[in-house]
Image (cartoon, rainbow, N blue to C red; front, side, top):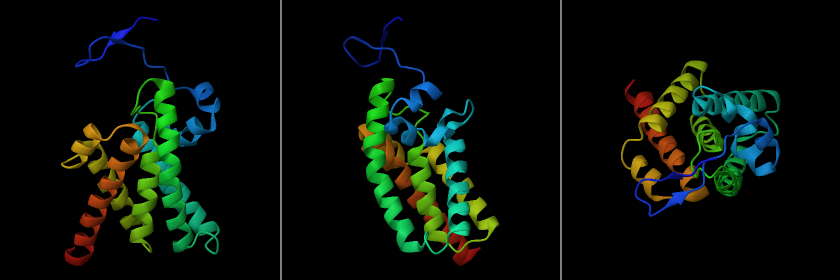
Length: 179
């Protein structure tokens, strides 16, 4: 393998590893960070991770409503955020890519938070939440882009998606009041 130089650094860095199923299954942190495989999608892994998050939220909430209550979901989101810091940091280091596109746990936790805050919601409202969240996550308007550039490691990976979730909730609240 050849070494690449990262712009703005003094010297060569190690090449980034390629995320694949073998890599993902090598450590529990990789499995979590890569969204149980949804982050390995060859196209738009962030969207695939968000879809996985939406689907898993809908299935778990519908199938086991007595277990997946609002309070339990809130605990899951908080614990998932903390676990995500560790999992994304470890996976980013192993890939030599601190915010690798295959790491989608941040999207999963953020969409769970959005869906939790807008529930109960119709399928139309859930789809709107999905689309608005993906918009903010991809476009990264200020201050999301600033957080993305300045907060590094697992916390940085997780935090910018929480800010995108907050923007999404603002838009959906505006839509509910004025739409």
